Every structure is written in C-alpha cells, then in structure tokens.
Length: 552
Image 1 (cartoon, rainbow, N blue to C red):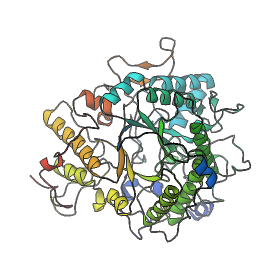
Image 2: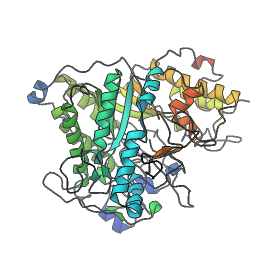
Image 3: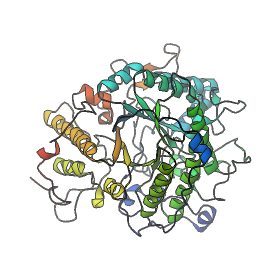
Image 4: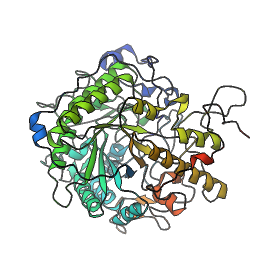
C-alpha cells in the first residue's frame, strides 16, 4: 500500500507532460510524472498503446513440470500483512514541499524515516550494522504472530497477501545465500526469507494460503516511498536507460543517491534485470519449499503499482516488457500457479496483453493471469462541478456508500468493470475503510461506527457479487502503533508499548481504520467470508455520479 490516487480513467490521450530539464529528459526519458503533485494525476493518465509484447506460449518442458494446483476457495477472502517484510514508514513531520503520499505516522508512530532503506541507513550510521540487523530481525519475528493469524482466520480470512521487496532474494555482501543475515548491495538487511518460510509453514498449518507479492522492484516508482525513495522508477525503464549504479534519491527525501555495491554481470546489466531475476529466484525457491510449507502459495504477484502514475506510453511499454520477461521466468518453476499483474489503470494495451497472455497460458495448462486493482475511497475527489459541491476529499457518507456499491472512482471510473468487459479476472489487492484523505473518525461515536460498518459490509457484498473478482484483500492485518523493534538493554527483542497491541493503537492514532484486527475489536469488521446480501440496498442513493453527494 502506498498513498496514491488509485483509479485512473482510461482514455486515448491525456498523458502528463515531461517537466524535467532537457538534460534529465535525455538521461531518463521514461520516468513517471510522480514529481508532479499526485493530486493532478487523477483523470489525466492512461494511454491507449497500439502495440504490446507478444505473449509467448509456454514450452512443452514447462507443461511437463506441471503438478496439481493447490486447492483454493471459490473466492479469496484476504488480508495483507502490510508493513511486515516491507516496512512502510514515513517521517515524523511533513515539510512544505512534501508530496501527497507522505503521511506522518504511517504505518508506525515510534519509528520514522523516508523509507525502509533510509531507516536502516540511519540505524547503521548511528549504531552499526549489527544493531540494524538485530532491529530488522526483531521486526520480522515480532510484528506478526500466530495469535494474529488465528484471529484473522476467525474473521473469515483464508488467504493472506504478503508484500516484500526485491531484496528478499539478495545475499548479503560477502555472502552466498539470501537466508544469511547481513547487508544487501543497496543497504537493506537480508535474511527476511527465513521469516517468509516460517510464515508459510504457519499458514499451511492453519489451512490458509499465501499470495506472494513483490511489492517493490528496484526503485518501484518516482518520489514514492516503497522501500526506497527514488527519483526515478529504475525498475521499469527502457533498455539502456537504467544501468546498474547508484540510485538517485528523491529531493523530498533529501536528494543525493542511494549507493550500491552491486556490479553489472552477465544477465544483470540494468536495474530491470534485477527485478526480473528476483522473480526468477523467488519462483525457484517456492518450487522447492519443504513439505510443511509446500502448497501454501496460491498465487504470485510479479509487481505492485509499477511506476506509480506513469507519464508516457514508453513507461507503460517498459512495464509490459518487464511482465513479459518476469512471467516467462516464473513459469519455468511455477507452471500452474496463478500469476498477477498490477497496473495503474487497465489501458487498452494492458487489457490486450493480459487477455492474450492468459489465453496462451491456459491453453498449455497454466493457471492463468489475473489483474490487480486497488479500490480505495481515500484518495477520491468529490464530486461534481458546480456551486455548493464539497471540496476535494470531502465526500459525504451518502456519496461514499454510493461509490462503494458501484466500485466507482473519481471521474466516473469503473476499472473493475473494464476488466470484466475484457473477459479478465482481477483481485482487489487492497481496500480499506479510510476515506477523505485519512479524515479522522471517532470510532466510539455510534453514528460513525454505523457508517463504517455499512462501508465495510457493502464493499464485501459488492466484491462477492462480481464474478470477475477472484479475491479481495483488506489493508492491513495490523498497524504499527506502539511497536518499536529497536533493541535495548531492557527490551532486546523490541517492544510493544504498554496499553497497545495489534488490536489497539495509541489514543488519537490517525490510521486506526486501516487495521482489520482493530476494526474487528471495535465490532466494525466482521467475517470477510460471510454474506452481506442486501447491504447496498439500504443506501439512500443508488444513481450515477452527481445524483446524491449533496443530499441533505
């Protein structure tokens, strides 16, 4: 999960202008428009590309490797383990030039940094490598527990989406295996793969499945905190545009570079190669899981929100090129596991690409390809244009409920419908109860509780009624309020502050509604797998855009 305007209307034009100096344009012509305020992105993006990579047919050798796919429910009822293997972290305060996605105390209120890599870099500078490694080991071991998984299962969760970064498959500098604890070429702590394995074993023991999500490629986006806070989306740039070397850091994070000791080698000359190779390594690792974890992985997401807010047809072409290479590598080891493609809006080119790739894959016995759409009401603009219309991000409850039951976004966008009309299945990889740019809500107020309960149930009703929706995943199982993984003499394993837990944030924590466990404790979130038929019928307004947002 990254703060963003998620649904982007699909059109044949409206690409953002490249605002960089000519010298930068010559250096990296495919960067995204995230340097432009993200509020301007809504309604401007998505190009209708005329061509896309040809979806290759799986080889007979790959088909021969196929085994029976793991049993899976008719629809995945899921939750994300956000903030765990990829620490989504923000600074303690905003600055005057801070981008929209910078939200102080997201997802933690005891630790602060521009990104996970910045957090680790700060720890190393202040206390040394061993301290940084111990901190991340504490986080991986203590942030998600078996008790939390048991609660999730009680709430109807049968599948968890596990986000992590490409570096999970890196060996430490001087090491030979990603299972070794140490420091990666870019400065991340390695060894998280041990904890992913332990999680898969716990899930299998509970009869739950895992959707593995490479949530961050090398510099996944431009000026968006997703493990790094890079100036350019190096992981999704055209051939020749992103040679391996130091990574420019977004000026919002202080500028400069993220240094790397990674050197170009055969098969890994550029940053997109690093991302593709991470997919291949992880797929191979999954194919070799031990018996007590084997079969726990029900789907594999190859990327998440790539190049958030792409500004050109060239960027989308580079994204499709990445997927073309990544799916080929994944299918060498996982011939029947469903693979998931994430796009910031299903353009005609992406629809065509996924449709052709899905058909070719299924023709040879593969598990097919799914789209990934994130449905949030948090970053949607309100409402129509005219006198008396509420300001941006000030939707009244009637309008929130109307949109939720139609899966409608700003600009009358209905991206789930676009996938359906293209004959494609899709997951709702992220959804939540946050609205109006994280507007504070008092969950102790009976009226507010009733509105949030309605919003929760109507989204589940709508997801469940859509045959094109293969599953939906609430963001997130827990938030990090009160959690501090840094070791001290008194708390060598980190500490969860007294009076807080995964089920209870500190008073006035601004992101309480993002936590499934906390919303369940409040009685707002109930079973994700229950039927909520008739919930949307209770709403006052069911019409098109502009028909109810100003009701008294």
